[in-house]
Image (cartoon, rainbow, N blue to C red):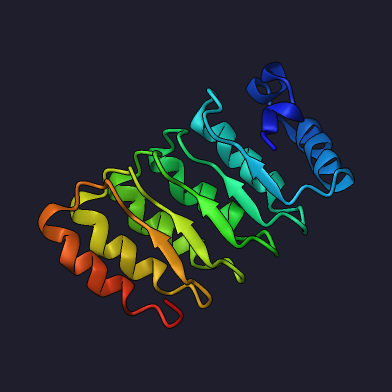
Amino acid sequence: MHIRQLLTQDQLNNFDESIALELIQKIEKGNIQNLSCSFLSVRAETVVLIAAALAQCPNLHTVNIAKNNLGQYGPATAEKLALAPSLHTVYMSGNNLGEHGPATAEKLALAPSLHTVYMGNNNLGEHGPATAEKLALAPSLHTVYMGNNNLGEHGPATAEKLALAPSL
């Protein structure tokens, strides 16, 4: 289900505590386990607030937060999502994380049940190995997608760091 089926664009543009509560109630009432928040066309700061609301949904298993151009807000978004108790799959692709990739990965790795992460198309380049090293800290991680990140010569080092994950 996409978040736009739960909230209007006006609510997304003016996201606040009362709208967050409404979102949480709709997710819980509908027993929604998979939610897409991709292509929101809102400020990155708003995506962080939405992630904080989603973290309060105990049955939420999968969140697609891709293609929101989070950049420097990637770590804050990941930190909020990592608080979701049942979260096991996160789509963070296409957020132009670049140098913020390692900090984003470090926060995501704190999610207790995280096992699948999509981090492709984030222009990680030279930050690929550090991002992989941080993701490898997730205790139950078994699938990572990091394609199309302009890794070039950093590809082998990125793969080596991912290989350190205990459950990959």
